[in-house]
Image (cartoon, rainbow, N blue to C red; front, side, top):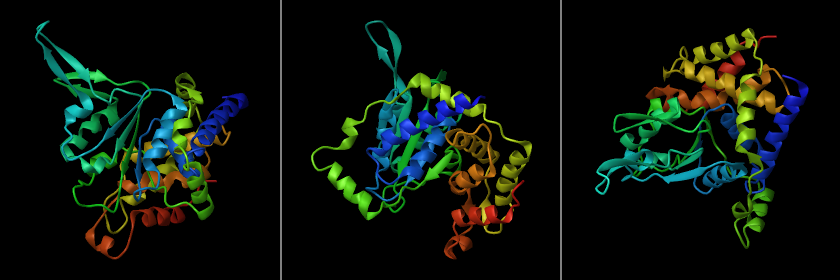
Length: 316
């Protein structure tokens, strides 16, 4: 990979980031991580308080790329067929015709995913992990460019179903937006005085350009020492006291891929320890399951990963 290639990739990232930032104020870091997850072929779970801009961010990203976008509002009565599609009998031709569901798209927004039943949530498992779905016993492939952004509110419990560990493991990262500062919130008020700025967002990157960016992420070099460092970080989560379920090998793969995307965004042809450490908490923490004693004592998965980052020696 030549310097001109990394400059091109960095330009694509900057264009996307600036386009999204016209709508989402004060979230530069979170936008960087979402784009890294997307460029590395992963899926993102946005978990934060209501009204922080989770859905708007997903919409702005989708509108920034000239690709097909669909949205599913998850509710308790949502069925798997509402996501995947269903075969309906056509009496005129005496055949069953497949009516594809919203999962057949490029960018899928799964809004308030924890409001649907576990049976419906699991309908996304196969599509997120394997890029295919099963309908009436037939395997159907999804688009080559397929990205899921799911949102959920952490404080609501009535009428919600927590995502099982297998589902959480399918998300490359879990991110929190948080509340923005006063100045940025004033900008939000000014921008929405007459019309919502999301309506003015137009594509700034073509589908072909983004597919090329995804291919370039795979070409970013990562040394064997850094691969071992990633494995050491993930392995340590399985040995920590108070952790019932540590991170899986899928976490190691996601950490390597997202760090590669960050390196490309930083105009580098190789991964450094800085990129791994920058993204490690967002990639690993949501995959951990703590025992009740640790949870009641105030220990969090994020704090455990942060402690691991401090304890594992960085290769030089």
